[in-house]
Amino acid sequence: MGKILAIANQKGGVGKTTTSVNLGACLAYIGKKVLLVDIDPQGNATSGVGIEKADVNQCIYDVLVDDVDANAVILPTSVDKLFIIPATIQLAGAEIELVPTISREVRLKRALEEVKGDFDYILIDCPPSLGLLTLNSLTASDAVLIPVQCEYYALEGLSQLLNTVRLVQKHLNHELRIEGVLLTMLDARTNLGIQVIEEVKKYFQDKVYKTIIPRNVRLSEAPSHGEPIIIYDPRSRGAEVYLDLAKEVLSHG
Ligand code: ADP
Ligand code: MG
Image (cartoon, rainbow, N blue to C red):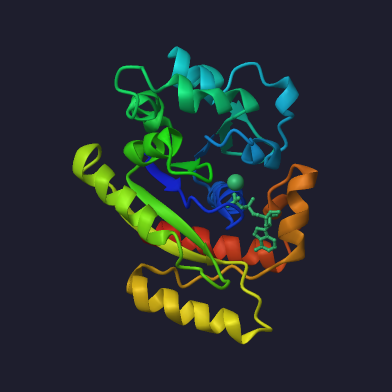
């Protein structure tokens, strides 16, 4: 049975999509069969693995709103063993359209039950909000991976996210765990980064991944080429650290 991880933080620009795409690609590179689920209407994970959104016929929207079988919307990517359920801007409507539907928070969970057995890992790239799409993701997941950007106010907003996790644990998914907190976009030239690392470690203790993702220009270039870093520039620092992260995630079993 595949392990389902939600990559979540309601703050935008903290590295959720970069982590979903590159952790997914690195796990696949190591030999695991991985499904990426893009549940952000911006569809950045979809384009990040080289899929032209204009060419997508059916996406996660159809699965969530119209009960289309998840198997029918899975696409291969440029990376061997890495597959994706894409998202298009159509998904923006789902947040509202799902409100009056029955079991609106468990729709993704039910859909993924159909495919869970076919993959070693399923990574869900969440949108920057704590709305129904993120609730569906947390309800469907075994654990949540929280990217935190190494900047001032890094911890700001995290109590809201942790509250949401607790509510989901209580009412929708008793099994949900915090897989880990990932420090991202560290600028090693500043003292600020070191301070933030200490602050986040004080708060989350052993939940913080040993792997810390530095700022790396190649990581920010790769999406415009539709390639995960392991394909775009396998010798870059970015590829190295996401490979380290993949090994660390694997070591958690
Ligand atoms: P989110 O999905 O949380 O909104 P993204 O993963 O899209 O965040 O990252 C926000 C921006 O920062 C993107 O332009 C991305 O390319 C860039 N970025 C993310 N991680 C890094 C990094 N380690 N080094 C350099 N740029 C990064
Ligand atoms: Mg994103």
